[in-house]
Length: 69
Image (cartoon, rainbow, N blue to C red; front, side, top):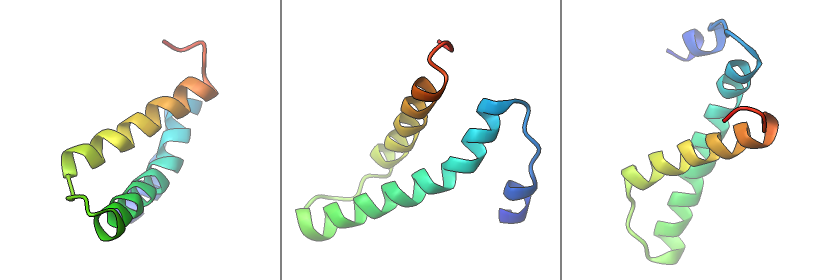
């Protein structure tokens, strides 16, 4: 599955950027979730984790391509 991810062809510059950064966003948000559970006394929430990855992607696209709405 990982090999398919890295060898995937992209359709445009935005798609290429998303393919490159999604693994980073997933790892970063997993790490933040782990720290919040371990040190902040919070419960793990997969729905919130998914939302944060999507939110990070949205913010990136808005920053990189402000003309896309």
